[in-house]
Each structure stands twice: as structure tokens, then as C-alpha cells.
Length: 164
Image (cartoon, rainbow, N blue to C red; front, side, top):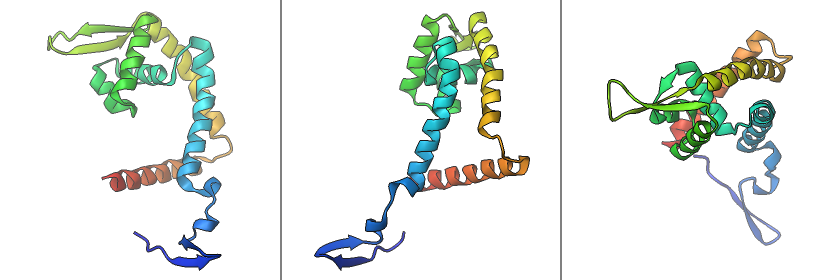
């Protein structure tokens, strides 16, 4: 951890470079603004077209790729918490996009799968979100895209190690 230097300026103690701090150049803030911009652009696809929330879309995306999963498995694969997944499941079931069954091998385990209507929505959205992904990464070479993903993974790993 870096030591903080204190100095007296106009009778006020200032630690480190606190006066020069600019939130707009602070990495965690930039990540948040990038996330908001990217998320808002994706929301403009699945929201108006199919009335889905962020959590519902993520749940569908996980299920669309894995076919049949429990709620706990969706939590593990989606970066969402249990409450968000639970709400998404409820909304998707009410919309007729998701079906809940008891696992044939383990009667204590509930499994979730997209209904035919849910699969149709998922298959409608995938090419649209892939096209958006291309638009978001426009102007980046294949090497730059790989570098971006690699750097993002390294920062994520650093953050996870710092979080304990």
C-alpha cells in the first residue's frame, strides 16, 4: 500500500495528491462509465424488442448457451446475485419465456430451461447483440481486441485478489 504524504496548505492538511484528484480520470469511475454506456447500448436491443430487463437478458443468455440449469448455476455463470436471478426467473416465467421443472435425476433440484417462445426470443436477440458487439469494437484490430480482453482479465484478476 502506498504511503500518504501530508502537507500543510492554507491551514488544511492534504494527504497525497487529494487536491489534484479528478474523478473523471479515476480508473474505477471510468470502468463504471464504460459499463453504463455499453450496458445502455445493449439494453436498447433487448428492452424495446422484447421487454426484457438486464437480469432477464443475462439469465436467458446463460440458459440459451447451457440449455438446462438450476438457479444456483445461473448465479455462478452470470455475475448476478441470487436476488437478481430470482427476480429474473420470476419475470421470465410470467412472460412464458422460462419453464421450471424438477430434475429427473434429483427430485430435490429444480431446473430451468427456455420455453420454445423463450428460445425464439433468444435466437432473435443473439445476432443483434453480436452485431452491436462488432459496432462497439469497430476500429480495433484483431490484435487490439485480444489485447483489450487480456488487459481486462488482468485488471479483473487484480481486483479479485485485492477483494480477498
